Length: 146
Figure (cartoon, rainbow, N blue to C red):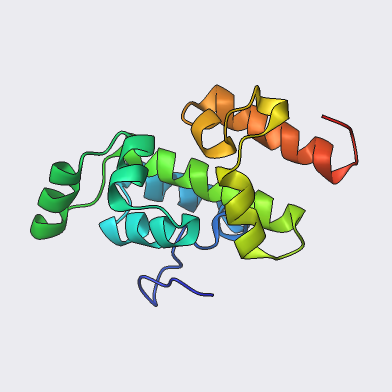
């Protein structure tokens, strides 16, 4: 399933791993300048979350998102960075489940014993937590019991 925002620039959350690895300097620059609000919508769809749920996870209020949309302003650097964080985890989970996006989405929302019973999405609300989710995915890929 594709969630394209604009044709000229790939949606960074849609293709997080590919876009960032292909041109990390450009990806960092895009995050620094702020991603368009459409990236929030694409990630929300990918994760199967409501606007409020993803807003809480990224620290972005619905009111701020609405203002930025109305004024056609990009998200700020911190919110953009958090979107890319969640997109990175989404695509790692999709890889873990061999391309099955529905299973990856469900896994991200299910309590994980390896994360103290928290869901991967909740655990990833900080960068430290996101790195731990990445480590958990790596362990699962290699069959390490968690």
